[in-house]
Length: 368
Ligand SMILES: Cc1cc2nc3c(=O)[nH]c(=O)nc-3n(C[C@H](O)[C@H](O)[C@H](O)COP(=O)(O)O)c2cc1C
Image (cartoon, rainbow, N blue to C red; front, side):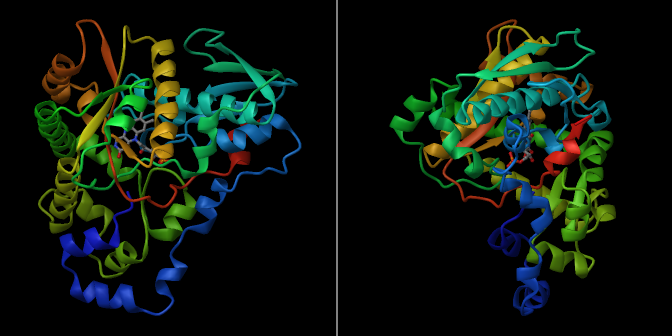
């Protein structure tokens, strides 16, 4: 989560911190985690087309930025794609549904990058069953660039309040080929309320909230050492850290001011939502989840191309006991009986955040 300076000042007040962090000459310029965002300049020079495609695929959205993908390059012209279970989210994603959606985003981006490079990719999904690789990708000739791929380096999950204006009707129409767009005022109001309640449940359930806090990276040094998880960076937040106003311990203590301010940031952000995008699937098998990820990736590229911001809000979709009632309500609102809501995202006009960290592509390649 990169909190914009404007919002942080509004929420934290922080005259002292602002004076220290904001005006210290040169400090701000040094706080960009350059190494952690270097993968956003993909390696066009790679000789192997599989590596070229992988250097884009690792930029896919994925839950908690766990980047659970591993690529085995031992067989020529093929990539055996695994999901790294060491990166599971047992509390908030107990059935690995969201992680599998993230793998779907990854394979779609891999295919698009290969196509832009002239290669067609043929996927065999779960060729050894669910406990084996997610896919075997075979590279062949004949790929054709997809116009959506032009937006790959500008795509973001925008975790910011959106402007108080409706999404243009032409954009709603264009996006409706990718997802169901909800912009009806009454339904939007219900979803704002429901996403907020779900966020509160996750934050006030100690084991689910702890899982997120343990994935927080506090400041540039931590972000560069582990370029994944929830990155808390930038000059303002680092200034707060320097003054002991933002620590892991405080984030874990619901009575601390830092925790309450974090809650306030999320409440304000979730309320500032003019529309939602929804993906449902007829059943909830692994292939449905991969397919939802592929669709989400394309939707996120399309929103980028239209100048719109998209932000997944998954709390109400999560499968643990405390969320059961809220998840059922969400399904009553958005799905037919038997369907699964796979993705719910805030949609609107927002700022363009800095890119989120990524592990370098070499670290995701095994047996290369
Ligand atoms: C299945 C899935 C679920 C996600 N759920 C959330 C969420 O509940 N809240 C959130 O802020 N971001 C969520 N995200 C977005 C990720 O946090 C984001 O993709 C990741 O941090 C990388 O950032 P980027 O998409 O800007 O590259 C989700 C992404 C995926 C694919």
